[in-house]
Length: 103
Image 1 (cartoon, rainbow, N blue to C red):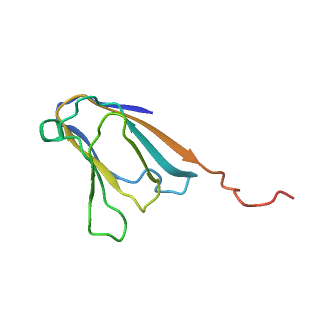
Image 2 (image 1 turned 45 degrees about the vertical axis):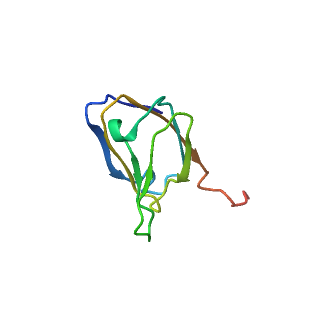
Image 3 (image 1 turned 90 degrees about the vertical axis):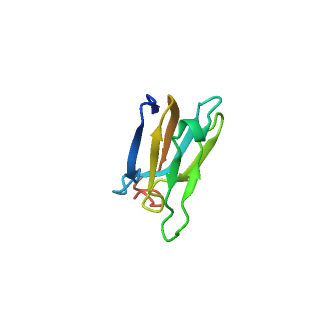
């Protein structure tokens, strides 16, 4: 999936990529934003790691790859962006039968 935030203050609410155990296990986000200035453009990805008070603030800088667990361990949100913001997201999945032997 490629996400494009139009730069009009659009963000994305706090969520978990896989709240229901549907097989998605790892989220990979690759940022495509050249010359991004977080002070001027905003658009931080904030991650609220489960069990931690510290918030991870990730700037959507060009050629940055972010990898994290897709489940409830990593609720996250995109803060308002004031320039066009691009991110390519890929979800790695595993089969629900992973580790089981067929009979």
